[in-house]
Each structure stands twice: as structure tokens, then as C-alpha cells.
Amino acid sequence: MKINRAKIEKSSAILFAALLIGGNTLSLSAQTQPKDTTLNRTVVVEQEYNPNIMDARKINVLPKVDEITVTPKSVEYDGTIFPATSIPGSPMEAFTGKEVQKEPTKGYARLGYGNRGNLDVRANYLLLSTPQDRLNVSFSVDGMNGKLDLIDEDGKWRSRFYRTKAGAYYLHQFGKIDLNLEGNFGVSNFNYLPASLYANQNHTSGDVRVGLKSKDNAYALHFDIGTGLLLFKKRYGNSDSETIVRTHANVAGDISDEQLVGVSLKMDNIFYDGEKKYDNRTALRATPYYEWNGENTKLHLGANVDFASGSGKSFRASPDVKASYLFSDSYVLYAQATGERFVNDFRRLEEVSPYAVSASWLDDTYEQLNAQIGFKASPVSGLWFNIFGGYQLLKDDLIPRTDFYIGGPARDHNVFYQEKTSNLNVGGKLLYNYKDRFAVSAEGTYYNWDADENINLLLKPEFQFDFRVDTKFLPELNLGLNYQYISRVDAEYNPENAVNNLGVSLTYEFHKGISIYAKGSNLLNKKYSYSVNYVVQGINFVGGLAFRF
Image 1 (cartoon, rainbow, N blue to C red):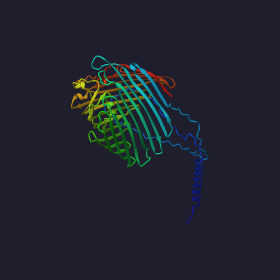
Image 2: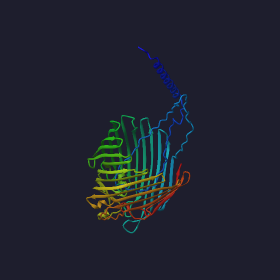
Image 3: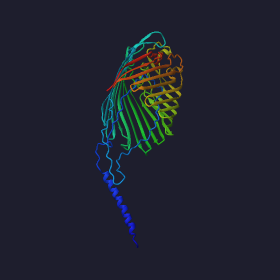
Image 4: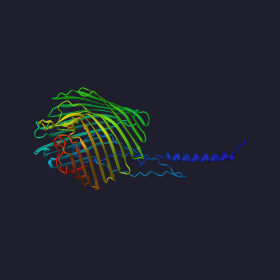
């Protein structure tokens, strides 16, 4: 057997060179880098508190439909220092210059005053901000006190309505679990129309909540659980107090990288004490579901099963189905068929009409179906549009009315009735933002409501249009224009005019951290109402100073 010595020598030389290069690479890579370098740092980014000046009153005619969002894939950067590939060579030393980041302000406060006693007070402060803990407190007062024209006859009404809110939120991040604590307190002081048997009304509310939420991929099962104690007290008109123990839990487990199954639970234990002596009751919901989150397709399949003990309907069921498909990067086709129980506790009654007094026991409103299909797209950067259509069916819908409409003499407060209602709706929404210098949004929706009695559609919208534009001509100057129009269903005995509200806002920072602001509302001086018979202000404005610190 012949041995090819030349090949052996050539192979040995190649092997020796490879070992030499590998040894140099290992020795170079093993050089110790300083712990504090630009390649090994933690940057904490905090967003400044920048609240918008919003109108004090809002109307929610349909439950909010979950927006379909497009989540781009995260970009991963390789920060390893590689040695020079040539021989000889040495690694380039990392630049260790000090990095300075602009520290955001933690506090915000503003104080404004206007005609008819309009008051606008806001304060928010981030007391604690560390990688593990966050504590935020807030306070607000808004309202008015002035004479208003009655909506359907001559005469004046000395109207007064002030809301005061205070709250605190605390978050602590453990290794795999987030703990959150929250507390809120609120007071609404207002009066009824001149003929009312009651004087100044007072609603007092408060709540404390605690929750635990697992971090992503921390455990085999993901969970979000919590409970809270909610209190509500009314002074006049069925001066009852309400206590709710509200508990929620959502537990899910991954089947694969794209699939999971879970169950969501929600329970309200409601207790009453007062003149009406309502029956204590419990409302329980269970929602088992399955989710598939693909690269372009998302699917959620579930069902809501509701039980109730005490007064009210004992059993309800509704679908919980959502689907979306993303194509061409920024075009989304989505659909949903959902339902929900709206517990008609004192808090929700105040939202629908603070001037209402329940004449008798009220069943919970149940959304048997909220079906919608739509298409969202972003054809160019900064532009989004959404077109949609849907159908909603509500059982025991809340209908605020007054005895005046049915021949009775009383018209100083609203009374709730309940009826099955439904509506077909179609609409569109447009959003455009240009380099944070110009932003515009427009949304219009047409509704076709149906009920057994047309009188029960008094405040239901027939067409709603919302428009807003914000401009930033200078870094210190912000201008805003907003307009809302809501035409009402043409119901019998309906004196409620269409909502026709034009507003403007201005903010000018004349010194670092100090701004002057002003806003005006109902500039067309139209007469309309959000609660039956209770007219809103005419032309009104408020202005003052805002501080960041």
C-alpha cells in the first residue's frame, strides 16, 4: 500500500492553518468587555402624559367593536463584536461615550374656567417609576353652573352639574407575574328641572380592585384574574345603596405556537340596601373559546353562557366569534358575531341618564347578537380607512322616557322602560396622520332601528357623523376643530332636536412646560339634549393654564 506523503503534508498544513485561525478567533472573542457599554445597556422609555381636551359628555350607541390591528414582526439586531477577518487582526473597541436620554416629565396639571361656571381641573402624577414598580395618581373636576333655556317651552332653568374623580393605580412586576392595585372615588352633584320634588342630587361611587396577570410564556397556562369591591349611593329618588363584588378570571393554554384554548369567567354579586329593597342577585358568565393566530389569519371561536339568580332572566346565551384575514401587508378583512350581558347596576343607569329614576326592578340588558363585517386598509403611509356593516339585537334595552310623554304631569326626571330593539347599521371611518403635524379623522354611521313602540326610540340615532382635525403649525402651537351631528329617529312626541355640535380647541406653549389653552363647544348655539328634556348649554367656552413638571 502506497502512502501519498504529499497529500498528508498538504492536509496537515490546511488543518494547522484552520486551528491557528480558530485559536485566534477564540482568544479575541474571549477578551473581556466592560460591563457598561453601548452594547449592554437598559433603556427605560416613558411616554409623557398628554391628555386631550375632550368634551364632558359622550354618547355610546353601540358597544365598541374590537379593532383589528396589524402587528408587524419585531426586528432583531445582532450586537456581537466580531474580530477582523484578516490575519493578523484585532477587534475594534466599542465606543463607550455616555448616552443621554431626554427624561420625560412625570406630572401634568391644568386649571381652566369659563362662562356659566364651566370648570376644568386635571392633575396627574407618576409618583413611582422603576423597572419593577409604577404608581400613578389622578384627580379631575369638571362641570357647569348657569341658566339654560328649557328645551320645549319658554323659561329658564338654573342648571348645575359637577363631577369630581380621584384615583390611584399601582403595578408591581414580579419575575413571572404582574400585580396591579387600583382605587377610585367619584361624586356627581347636580339638580333636576325646576318642577322637581327633589333638590340637589348626589351620586357617590367608589371602588378598589386587585389583579394578577402572568407574563407571556412564563407558565404553561396564561392567566389574568382579579376581584374588586364597587360601591354606589344615591341621595334622592329611590335613595338606595348598591354593593358589587366583581370577579373575573381568564385562563388559557397553548396547544401549539399558533393555537390555544381557554375559558373566561365573570361574576357579579350584587347587594342592595335602601328604600326599594331590591333583591340581592348574582350574575355569572362562562366563555370557553379556541384561538388560532396564524401569520395572516386570526380566528376566535367561543360562546357566552350567562346565568343569573335572584331577579331577572336566569339563562342567556350568545356567540363569541371573531375572524380576520390580512393580505397584501396592510389590507384586513374582518367579521364578528358576539353578544354580551349589560348589568343594569346603578353605575350603568347613571351613564345612560343621570336624571333617571327607576320606577321598578330592571332586568339586565342582553345583547343577543352584535354581528359585523368590514374591510380595513392602509393604501399609503399614514392613511387608514374602514368600511363596515352590521346588525344588533338587544333584549330588555334601556329606554329613558318621562311621564310627560304618556300624559302624566311629571317631567322633571327620566323613567326607564325596557323593550326589545334592533338595528341595521352601515358606515365608514377615515384616519390620516402626516408626520404628527396634521391629523384628521371622520366617521359616519347610518342606523335603521326597530321596536314594538316607536315612542321607545326617542333618543336613538338615525345618522351619526363625527369629524376632527388637529394641526401643529408650530412646535408650540396646536389647533383643533371637531364637529358632531346626530339625527334622531322621528318618534311620536319627540321634541329632542338633532345633536349639532361644533367645537374648537387651542394650546400654546409660551414657556417650557407651561401652556395656555382654550376650547369652545356648541359654537352654533343649537338647542338639543343627551337626556330627555335636559338641554345642553348654548355657546360655552373654558380656558386656562396647563403645566408639565
